Image (cartoon, rainbow, N blue to C red; front, side, top):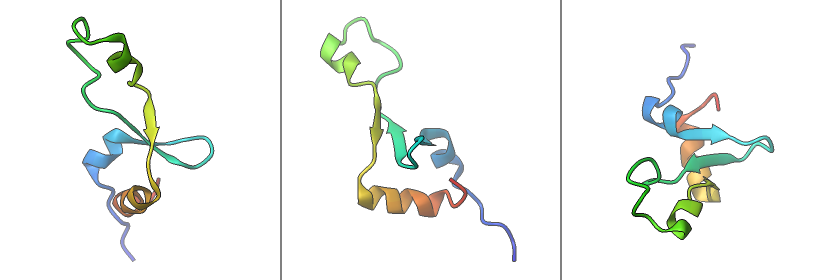
Amino acid sequence: MPKQKSHSGAKKRVKKTGSGKVAVKRNSRNHLLLQKSKRQKSLSRTLVTEKGDTKKLKSLLPYL
C-alpha cells in the first residue's frame, strides 16, 4: 500500500500541541505592525481549532 501524501500548504500552517490538539497561527500578524493596535497584536497567539476543523485537518495531514 503506498504512503499517503500530506497537504503541503497545511504542513506549513498547522502544528500539534503537546496535548495532541491541532493549533493554527492567526493571519495578518507578520508585518505592518506599527500601525496596528496593542489589542490586534495581542491576538497573534496560536489558536486551537474547533472539533470540525480538526477532523478536516487530520485528513489533510494523515501523519500529524
